[in-house]
Image (cartoon, rainbow over the protein chains, first blue to last red):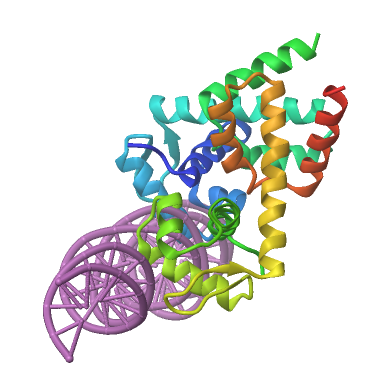
Length: 123
Length: 123
DNA sequence: ACACCAATTTAGGTTAACCTAATTAGGAAT
DNA sequence: ATTCCTAATTAGGTTAACCTAAATTGGTGT
C-alpha cells in the first residue's frame, strides 16, 4: 500500500535525526516536524506496524531496511529538486522549503528527467 | 484565510468547465474531479460561503470575481510548470499530471523564477 | 394530472492527521 | 525510599475531505 506524504516526512526526518544526533526519540520528531508528541506516537505506531521502523514503548526509534530505503529515496528526490531550483536562481531557503513539498509528489519519470537536466546543465 | 489545495482544484475545474461547456453543474465537477456528487455539494457550499462562487440549490454554478482570480492564478502556475517540465523533456501527459500537483504548492518566489527561466531558455 | 427519471441534497458514516488535558513511567537528586 | 521532572502515553476531541444509502425535486412525456 502507498505511503502518505506525511508518513514520508516522518521517515525522512527520522533518518536525518539519526544521522545528526545518533539516536531518535518521539520528542525530537515532534520538534522537527512541529507537531505535538501524541501525534508522533500515533504515526510511529503506524509506521511500526507497516514494518518501516522499530519502536518499543519509551525506547529509541530506528528505521528498518525498508524504511531507510524509502527515507533515502525521498532525500534523493529532495536533492535533485534543490539543484534544479538553484539553477533557476531560487533563493536557497525558499528552494529548500519548496523542495520539501515537491519531493513527495513528482513522478519517477519527472524525477529522472530533472536529474538528467541537472547533470547536463551542471557541466 | 488560506485556501486548501483541494479547494483550489475545485475552483480551477469550475473555471475550465465553464470555459469549455458554458455552464457548470454539480455532476460535471464530480466527474472531472472523480469524486461523488455529495462531496461536491459540500465543497461548493463552503466556497460559496467564502464568496468565491455563487450557488443556489439545484442551479448553475458561477465563480465570483475573486474566485475567478484565484482559478486563473492556479492555471497560470500550471502553465509555467508545464513549460518548465517540457524543457526538461518530461513527456507531456506526465508533465500535465505532475504540474497539477505542483501548481498548488510552490511559493510565489519560485514561480517567478520558473517564469524567468522559461522565458530565458525559450529564446 | 401523474408518474417517472436524473440530478441533487440530506443524513449519517469513515479516515488521516492533528490537538489538549490528564495520566504514567523511569531516571536523577536529595 | 521518596520526590520530582521530563518524556511518553492514553483518552477523547476536531477538521477536512471523502463515502454510501435514502429522500427530494423539477422537468419531461403521456
